[in-house]
Length: 320
Length: 320
Image 1 (cartoon, rainbow over the protein chains, first blue to last red):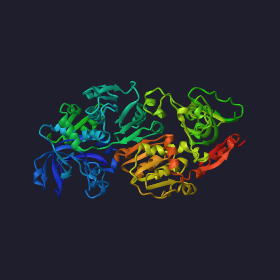
Image 2 (cartoon, helix red, strand yellow; image 1 turned 45 degrees about the vertical axis):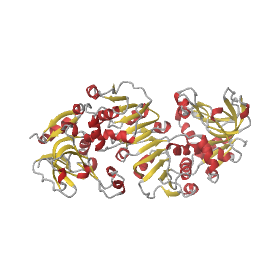
Image 3 (tube, rainbow over the protein chains, first blue to last red; image 1 turned 60 degrees about the horizontal axis):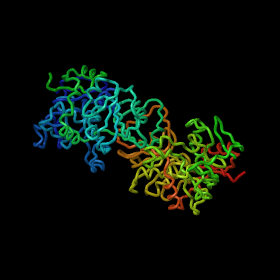
Image 4 (cartoon, one colour; image 1 turned 90 degrees about the horizontal axis):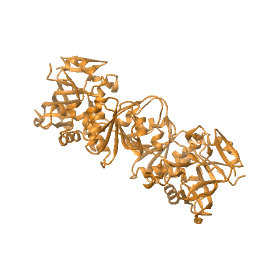
């Protein structure tokens, strides 16, 4: 089969073996696969991953020992939990210490004709949801995770720092539950695109009123937390939405002085992302799609994904 | 009157003017005053403070327009709130943006024969509590703040990093509400002293089982947070108890990956600290007192407070 593999460098090939089926797992014929920031990090050595790249997809189940799955269009949660530990018992398989992760940690990913996931990870996609929307379930669920961790009354003043895919999705997810959401970014065209409901947009260099109840750092840069601390009110909450390595000296004293809460927030539950797609069909998810590429054009696609104006770059497995 | 003043350098003098009384404020004759880590930071320029040092005290009200206060032995909360803003209205005067702070920010402190505070800040000290215990109300209340911010079920596994005054007080406060508390430090003699109830003590270089529900960083160093991240379980809570400036590169990704909560925790309510003193008369607070000095021996006292084995150094205003 065709696949994009990372092993010191990115390679496209056509002769990778089809994955074997195994009990409790499904083999999925991929239709669309997305490039995520994490993929770009993997290419710099993140997680020491080698294998088939990719963890965002929509596809159709091709083989499975449970026949009910065969032929169903699905998306899938990316962490394959062990199912036997205390975390799994508590329904928090996402934190299972023995988990493997699709295209990220010891499990071949979805930038290929076929990929494998436990059936427990799969979610059928309803007919009303297009492939282009369904492929965004993973990042949208990651945005929804904030709502699960931090129940909102709706009256909070919220600032989202970062106008990348994740920042925009966070702003949209939060705008479903709160009236006063501002997104701050460097790119006027991305901010334009982020407008939905009553979301306000502000350029990074403009002044923003401080005292926000909640500040989301989705900048993906080490600078975001400093601005988040200064914009957040005493006893307010800062949500760290991207894995960041702070570089250079940083004074975390404001967190203590103002008794702010910093909340790490990672992946979300696919059920939440899918419910949001269903409940908010006008959420302009398709606008996030910057381009579609054939798998063989891996190099071009990854180049495009790294350009400053890019949002979501997709591989279309039906393109030759 | 006698006073210890900081203005570029530390000075002891005997000819400072007595503070004037003003409506709503009390003048307090100081009996004991403590040296806090914050005082040492002020001497390095923290808050740009100049004036009479000190914010930990026990004393007797000497003058006040409300005669009911005169002659009462008191301790006092250190933030003089404006009383007119949204924070003050919500009972969170500690976060009032217009507040001044005793011996820290635009308000002369208590390392003097007399100091001034609003009567709203004062707490009468019951006869059963000695001066030596009462003078520790401020740091004990700061430790109690954790219990206010983070209600405990009692079954949590808690690790306190740091065997300084604040670390020990945090361990003691937490041990009143949870059974499994471990304190980690560099100093065997301080760890010995920290033993109370079932608190376990561990030397810094020893291995500690990770997966703690709650980790308190009271190290006062930039290294504490890295160890806290590694000891804390997924979805656990890290409490930052000291204002820290992180130096050099630090990877905060574990907070996001493990969805940990970081909680900044500062001063507490004196009522909580006093209630704890009343309810736990066996809490060995006096053990924290390293030495007592006359105000004129300011230099010696501050030197002593900076030694590695020092815990709480007091000024005794009755010593000549």
